[in-house]
Length: 55
Figure (tube, rainbow, N blue to C red):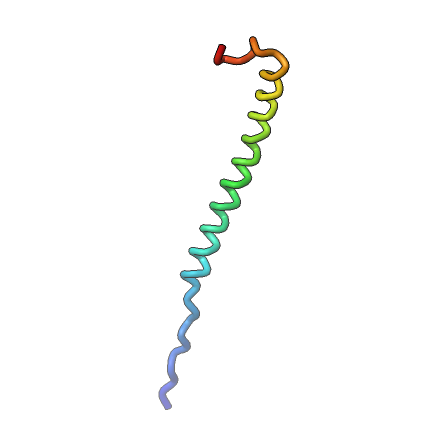
């Protein structure tokens, strides 16, 4: 009676997809946070053109 060892399921591709999704979400969150800073600066420049560094 020889028993076949159970082959463990390989989760390599699931881990790769998970890491890629995590990186994508992190980049999206950082980018969306940075966007607010530029909107505030743009509004300040529109109100007072002397506020701009590009005179």
